[in-house]
Length: 75
Image (cartoon, rainbow, N blue to C red; front, top):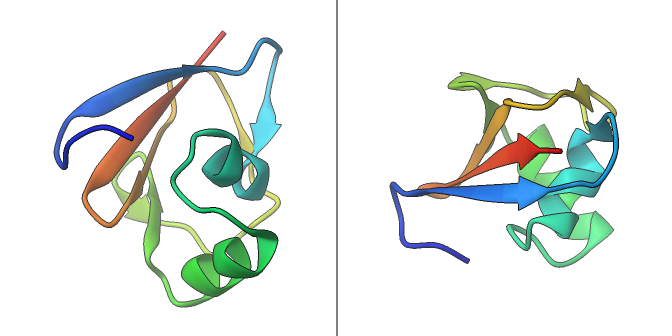
């Protein structure tokens, strides 16, 4: 995980990925339960805006934030 404020590029190796999957894949959260709670509590942002949809389809270039850490979806 990167230092707070920095953006870490995370290669997903495909066209897209769902928000809940990406949070675990990028190492921002460890479990599905943690992902569900963080999203429901409004603690997760996509491109700077709170997103409450765990199944949101992310695209290359989207930036996901959680607790000061940010990760960019890369091919």
